[in-house]
Length: 269
Image (cartoon, rainbow, N blue to C red; front, side, top):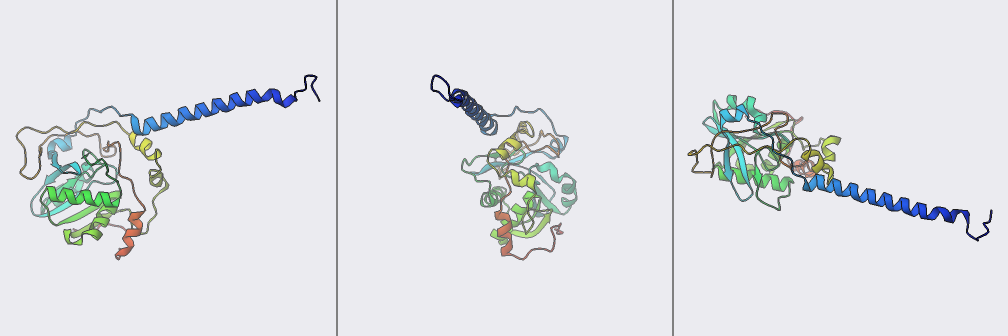
């Protein structure tokens, strides 16, 4: 049908379509801005929680150029370093520390992205190269040249990578349900590698926890600010860093350079 004014029937809908497109674009822009703010701009409020375990064990700190490492230490003997499991904190090894401390000096450390360790290096990459460098920096800071090394979940992949890069610094290696080798990551962990998605997921899992306090007069000759007292949420939700270390595909490819065990598991220290 032809209109008397010469305009086609469809021309009347064009302004509506343009308005709809502008509205959709505006809504998308607002959504993207909110997602970016939630991932990179929003800072979670601090949660008030005191951990009886850290109060008992005593939090210690080692300052390096990479990070201010939070750790606990127990026992005496040949050194053993336990890396906090995955996205948790030192409390993840609480059931093993007392047993190992009978014969070893046991260090349990939060690497960058875990527990109460605070990153100093603004260019830290959170990949295998960065995580293994961080572990070496911690060992240097506490004066440990060589140690038995144990990792669980993500930290097992970091322990394996560190051993491959620095075999002279590892006397024994224990891997418990470790990432790496030829095992693919689960879809949930793989999703954390996606920009914005990973930041949103880890930022909103829990509120930021205050750093454990340091008792006056409890310094150390090897690390600045070593002391006691602590605060932590729980074993399951202990991680509070706004940027957790993410698993990388490098952990799988790199592990093929050395023979692997038949299945991931715990190797006796």
